[in-house]
Length: 415
Image (cartoon, rainbow, N blue to C red; front, top):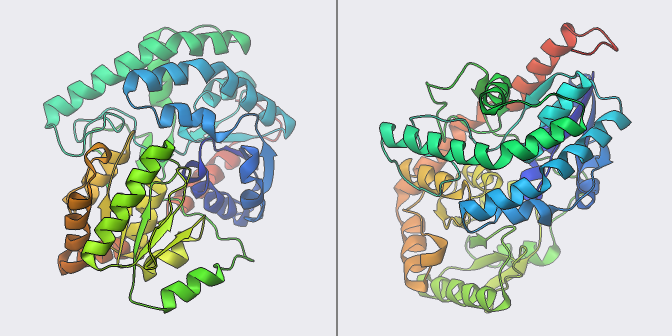
């Protein structure tokens, strides 16, 4: 079956789909991943076809990195039609028979309807309302309680619907589809089968979700066969005890903010006596002492098992990699779903209480790193999560779902 995965966003939003694509290809399907041009090499190295989709990661970054909900919604509203048109273009180019959509590619749901194609959501974030945890994008690290969780979810979804429904119906008009009212769009979303790339060991599947929503594990990025770690990094790791990894991923910072963060990271590492591996990321962070090394992109599967702890923003991909490695996490969440993941890590004991980015200081980071590396319970909890996650197979579940679609689809027929 000709499968088109549409993966929009930054590195952490796209990389997990390389492993999913490779698994579908191994299962006998003809797989293409549509993404922004900068990810072409990584996608092709997974052994699947790459198709360029117009745009760049910073467009999605405008709303995934927005400082508040109103900014995020304005940015999402602005490019609903652009994303939908781009998805339609790549879907028709390769005569796709089924669409698999990341969360940022959700306008593709309207494209699938217009083309008569079956469609699956393969989201990395939980967005469907529940009483079991607050909205993923509310920025809450803990619990509000069942009633408040449900009320907050209902309120946030109502606001998002009010903002996005108009743009969605304009896209539907351009695709030749009749408009849907708010309830119609809500019902359309509820009917979409979503196989989340989220570990139920980290976040159990809510009991009040509809049967269309599944959650059975993370999707894991592939590593390019020719990949080798930088010699300088290998030498640094061999020259001393396990260091602490620090990254803020695709977070953009002003030069002044990047300098401030780099300074307090160096100070926290000095106070704890730990060496550091600092990932530059979009902020351009850099270590300042001989006991640190600054790196660009690397394989977390290779690096993280060699760390004493990992300090990061708790993006879903970095969160998954840290837990898979079985090392303690110090969460410094900034926006979006990051506080949810940071809170879950701490609740399960795989790291100390998270530090909100706006409250990050050398003293707080020192205390958190000290706790992460000195309290055996954090490593034990992380290793237990790693063991449980190893038994999960989300990509296999997606393959099974695509196989079921293929079994009931007549070649050339539209649904």
